[in-house]
Image (cartoon, rainbow, N blue to C red; front, side, top):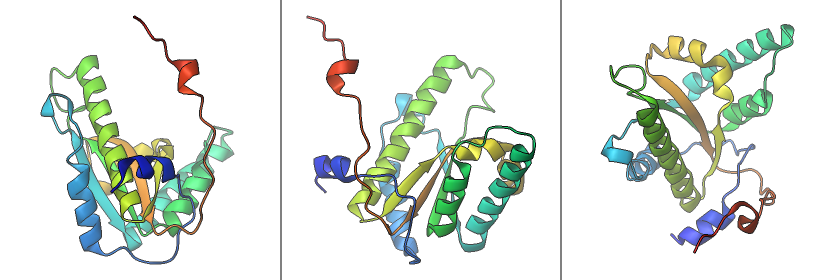
Length: 188
């Protein structure tokens, strides 16, 4: 893989072909994912791979929560777009922090370290997926229904993100980025 090309080509994909990803390919993707840098080598990430009915159940849980929030005039972010992507994707991988709710001496600095490590794992997953010609969408709209999702899965650890994965059915153009020169201070 040409990492520079993967970084330049990567896009958030919100429309997928109705084509299943072979399990072996998802396993390989996860093998790459766990190679991500991990602060203090804590490896706080845990993954739940959802396919077929379980992926559909995730979308249903999210849709019900979003309907409830809308009736209360509460924010729903881009949840409808995320739910549509989940419905179309071949696989959704939920990402959890295994330590934040269980370590007695868990503190702000461990949270920052673990969150950065999990973010690195998700980025590694997304770049590896790009190399496999798969599209991805990093989803945080799951936060609106975090409690319901964790209850459904009988999980007590902290839900951090979801990643929808599938064969892309779109080729979005790149989104604008602020130039690094505008956001970087260079000291000599």
